[in-house]
Amino acid sequence: MSTASALRHLTATEVKLVLREPMTIGFGMLLPTVILLGLGSVPILREPTPEFGGVRFVDIFAPTALILGMGVLGIQHLPSVLATYRENGVLRRMATTPVHPGLVLAAQLIAVVAAVFASSALLVLTAWLVLDVPLPRQPLLFTAAFLVGTASLVALGVLAAALAPSSRVANGLSMSLYLVVMLVGGLFLPRIFMPDVLVRLGEFTPPGVQLLLDTWSGGADTSGTGPLAQLAIMAVIAAVAAVAAAKLFRWE
Image (cartoon, rainbow, N blue to C red):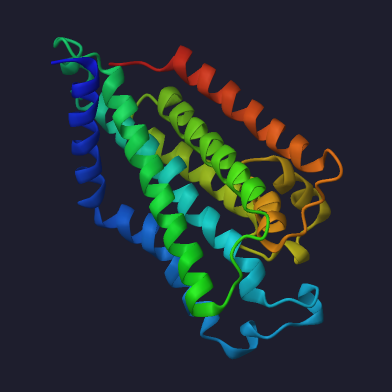
């Protein structure tokens, strides 16, 4: 079997496993949209208010709901699965076959990224069609922010799996990382009410919720270097985490 064929079969298997995992489907793919719809069902949250700069709460909460799914899939589901594979000897047994265990890692990454894309597409389209939240007004820059943000979260998730000696430790690391990402992302408190230091952190740390918010609303200033600097810093974080994970990852 060729490497391409093996990767194709492994990816199909990983996708099926993701779809059979109720927690992943529920919390990673459906919950962000359900939360946004739930908040959108409250009439006052669909009205423009001065507290939110003259826009509606659902308009500024949509990017935060977006990172909820990205975080669950990238830095909770991914480290848990990889650490469990290693703990159960799946990767060690793969090493005794002509198929390198690295293909399992690649297939898992493809399955997780596909799930992130599906979750995000569902949220964006539902927000647009049901709550009348406009589609991202700066689509190219929004797409770049989304791709770099997803890559940085996935890289951090693989690094957590690389550092954890067991699935239990991997779950602890990924939960701690998830809480930090959601804190600076404004999930626990709207960003306009957050301390300045947390707001500034959220501008440059994965998954770049401020850039997602600015490009969705059309408020990103493309005349300066601000958005490029935000993308560059997150790209550097993704690269450093990926290189560290590659060096530290243990197959058994």
